[in-house]
Amino acid sequence: MGRKREKNDAVPPETKPETELEAEGTTEGTDGDQAEVDPIEAMRAERDDWKDRYHRALADAENARKRNQRERTETRQYAVTEIARDLVNVLDNLERAVAGIPEGQTDDPIATGVRLVLDQFLSTLKTHGVETISALGEPFDPMSHEAIQQEDRDDVAPGTVVEELMTGYRLADRLLRASVVKVARAPVPATETAEEDDAESPKNDGDAAGGGPSATEKE
Image 1 (cartoon, one colour):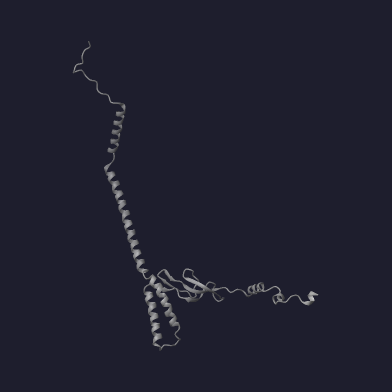
Image 2 (image 1 turned 90 degrees about the horizontal axis):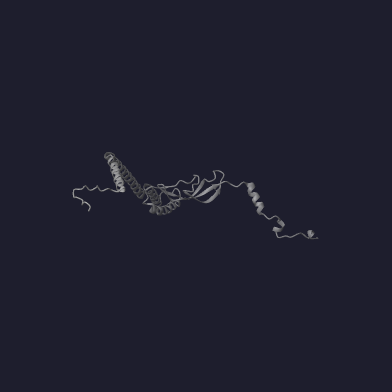
């Protein structure tokens, strides 16, 4: 019979698989890499990140403040746009009333009062930023003028405003109402006018008068 194993007999150490050994080596290598990160450099990177965020937030806040201030200024400046657009129509009637007063009539209290009201009206509108648009004698500007008529003129350049039919107004840099104007154009030469008349006239004056061929021509 074989000999029984004694308690004191040495037991061979337990061998780990190769995969476990490789995994342990990998873990140790990773821990070594993490241990090599400088904490001071990490803190500096975090500090730079927060500093960049702070500057961005500060710039956004400043832009928002400027935008709000600009919007408040525009709201205050253009708050009277609608009422000013309506008031210029009333101003037209005052100007027509003053234009209808005979020249040299200074002793009529009603005429004097209308003139004073007109001056005060213009002054008040100007205080709130409403100004008239210069048109007479100026080159035609489609952004502030509305041309409804043309007139042949050889004493001014073509496209010049020769008559202002209705005054235009502007509130700051916004147009309230365009000036209604008459614009000059170059006169057509007389020769071209005569050629156009000849082209429009009938070729046979006799046919135009209703007469046919004469009796001699029939024979």
